[in-house]
Length: 115
Image (cartoon, rainbow, N blue to C red; front, side, top):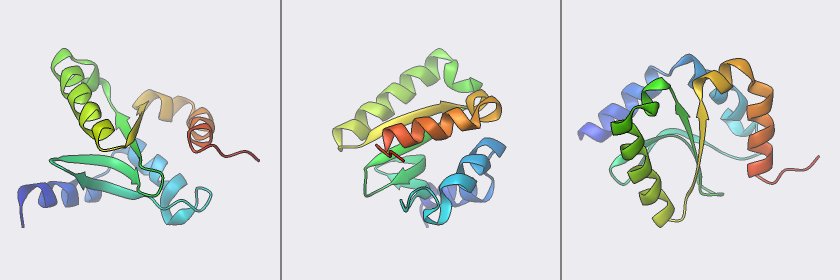
């Protein structure tokens, strides 16, 4: 098995508390029937969550993503995903910790859900 697959499996088995919180909302088609995959491989990258049918990637970012080298890396990844037709949505850990309702509403908006 190649390293990317091994890394993806390890990430699935060791999700952060913020990833677990989001996963509890979107797993098993709980989010308006949309199916999400977690720690999914796209090209040479692993994304946190992917809704294939809508081509939406949800990334959960901790403080390390605010460092210059990681900002550049994240921008490069986002450009790659966008070139493949994906839309990338990013949430900060503190958003998930402090305003999960706001995160949920933002997801509804992105998925164009009205109820």
